[in-house]
Every structure is written in structure tokens, then in C-alpha cells.
Amino acid sequence: MHAWIEQLTGFAAVAGQFLFAAIGLYALLRIVPVRQTTRWKRLAFLQWRANPPPAGWLKGLRLDRSSGSFQEREVLLAGCGFTADAGWYMLGRRIGMVACLGLAAIGLLWYGFSLSLQAQLMIGLPLLGSILLAADIPWLRSIRKLRALQMTKEIYAVSNQLLYFSDSSLHLHTKLVRCLPFTKLMKEDMERLLAEWYHDPAEALQRFKHRLGTDDGMSFVETLDALRQHESSQYYQLLRVRIGDYKDKLELAKESRKESTSYVLFVIAGIPILYTFQIFIYPWIMESQKLFQSLE
Image (cartoon, rainbow, N blue to C red; front, top):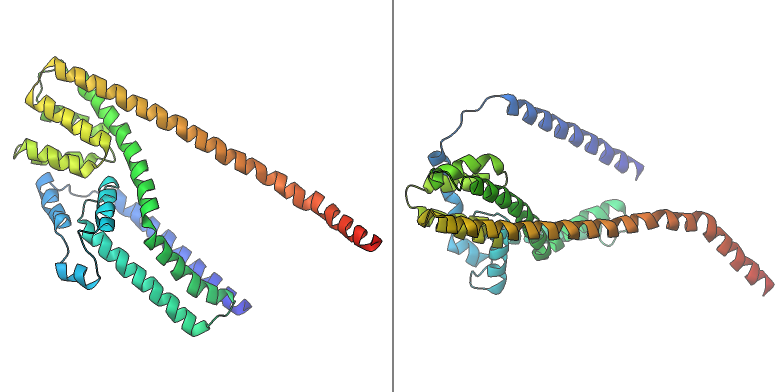
């Protein structure tokens, strides 16, 4: 047992060395100047994501696009920023579940119902992985919520910048180009929008709305479409109203985050109390029980 723990510790040390070496190599590669690809080349590279997987693969793994679970995950993935076809995710999820269950079955056949640490790892970890993959909807919703909040922050910044350009005679495309530095999460989506703009701005905005996949993103795109069709101060007034809505949502999320943080701090503050009970009070309780038992 001790020898196996030493081997596991050595393996973890070697894995840590490889990890730090990979991080260092990545940092060095980031320093090397890279030739920037044009927007159209990047757009052509991203086309494969929209292609669905072969229908035979989905049928072989008993996946149906018309099922409620598939469509629910498709909506959640769009909200999480997953730009590829949802079928690829469903394929990977199903293959991962089968692989984890297979590894757990192999571990059970190899170790039986042993309670050793190695048996628990070989059986428990694959089972845990299969459970996480099977119950993926809660954490997909959490990811979508976090992404939606970050997206709202960036949309709020871009909308304020567009409002700053309300008196300018620049074209909306040029204004959006100047708003790019205020984006991070949706920068790639905006670059793709600007690349597709002169081909068909209406279709480009619709695809941009689908890629954002949030309620605030949809309202933002609708405002952009209105500004594209009618460059007037009335529609900038609509933009000002939307900015107020975004600000209210951000303030509400900030208050909710403060409340959640206070709950977490309350739980953390209770840990020393439990530790004090275990160290100082619990021995007295045990001694009192022994005293009462001796009196009986």
C-alpha cells in the first residue's frame, strides 16, 4: 500500500513538471509575433463548426434531434457560446458516458468489491465522471448565467460607446469597429459580424444574434438593426433606454452576488466554531457519558 502511494506521488510530481513545462512553453510562444489572419480566412475556418455530424453517428448512439433533451441542450449550448452544431456535443457526451461506465465496469471486474484506495479511484472516478456527464443541464445553466452576465457588461460598454457616437456622421459599421476594444468575450463574434456586414447586414445581424444567445444580446442586436435602417436621434433614445435596462440588471446581479458571498462567509465563519466544539467541548461530553455509565 505504501509503495503504491509512493508511486502515485511520483507520478503526480512528474505530471506537475510536465504541466509547468507546458505552461512555460505556452508563455514563450505567446511572446513570438504571429502573423494575423484576415477576417475572411478566420470566417472560412469557422465554417466547419456549423456542419452537423453524420446522421448515422447520431442514430448509432441513439440520439434524436427532435427529442426534448436534445433541443433543451441545444438552447443551453447556444447560451454558453458553443458555436458548433449541438450534435457534436451530444456525441461527445454520449461517448464519454459509455467510456466512463466501461472503465468503472473494468475496475469492478478487476478489483471486485475491495475497499482499497486504488479500487475506489479506479471505480469511483469513472462513475463520478459519468454522473457529471449525465447531469450536465445544471452546470450548463450555470455557465450560461455567468456568460450572460459578462455579455451584458460588454453590451453595456458598447452601447455607451455607440451613444457617444450618436452625433457623429460615421457609418454604423465604422462605429462598431471603434467599439471593438471594449469587448472581450464577444470580440470574435463582433469581428465575424463586421466581416459579414457588407455581404448582407441583415443576415449578419441575425447570425450575430444567434451566436450571442442571450436575452440582452437579442435586444442589443434588435437595436443595432433599427439604427442600421434609421439613423435618427429617436433610435438613439431607444438605445439610451436599453442602456438603463442593462444597468439595472447589472446592479441586481451585483446585489445578488453580495448576498451569495455573505452566505458563504457565514458558513466559513461557522467552521472555527465547529472546530472549537470538536477540540474543547466534545472530550468533556465523552467524559460525562463515561461518568454516567459508571454511576449506573
